[in-house]
Length: 134
Image 1 (cartoon, rainbow, N blue to C red):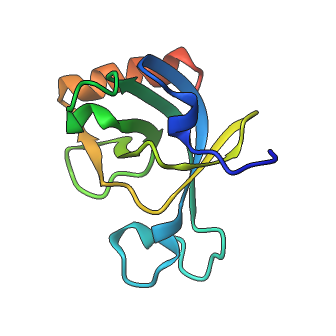
Image 2 (image 1 turned 90 degrees about the vertical axis):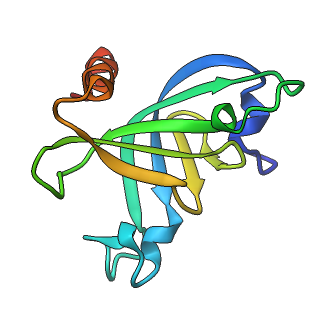
């Protein structure tokens, strides 16, 4: 890629689903919650999962719809948690590679394992199964 692009440069509006790699830069920092298992790893945490972008047109101001949602498998931390983690980040994520889609983010805005009994887990499991990740 000749110029640095962000995910927002590719997603104008509407719903899109991508199989993607996401590199969490915050996981490089000692002491952050997201660095478990990555201490001493110069790559940080690299996740493989499904990216869901449902972006509203620029005329609509809706903060919840101005973030990409990323679902990936990760070991649960607590009882009752599933092995699917949901994280979200802004559309200013840096595109490292287009094929396969690979992004670099500073940090997830929120990241947590979905509860086994939740409807969100069932939907996320179907989404990951659709792309052969679960």
